[in-house]
Length: 117
Figure (tube, rainbow, N blue to C red):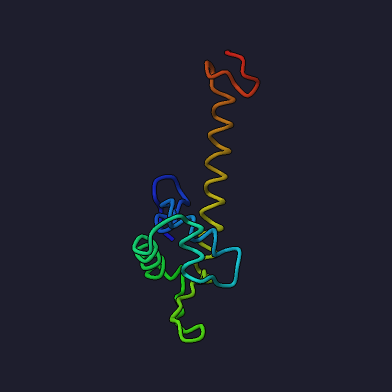
């Protein structure tokens, strides 16, 4: 896991498309390439590049095979990828919580109750 800015944010997952792919795959054992592509709303090329980057980081595994006579590709989030996603999401929650607390405690920001102090 690597940092991208604030501590705990993983640069391999931080990109919105990579995060969307990892989040989608976290909800299933594996998914067909086309299902992931359609969910993410990206082209085959964009998803291929995204998967290659996540595969290089050992966050996604790729399985190729056939469904009948048609070639298919299935994607799965690896245990390493699941841990990295959980840590990244925890870091985002911590960042949001810290920012919320700082905003509530900083004079002149309106605080949590919306009033200027």
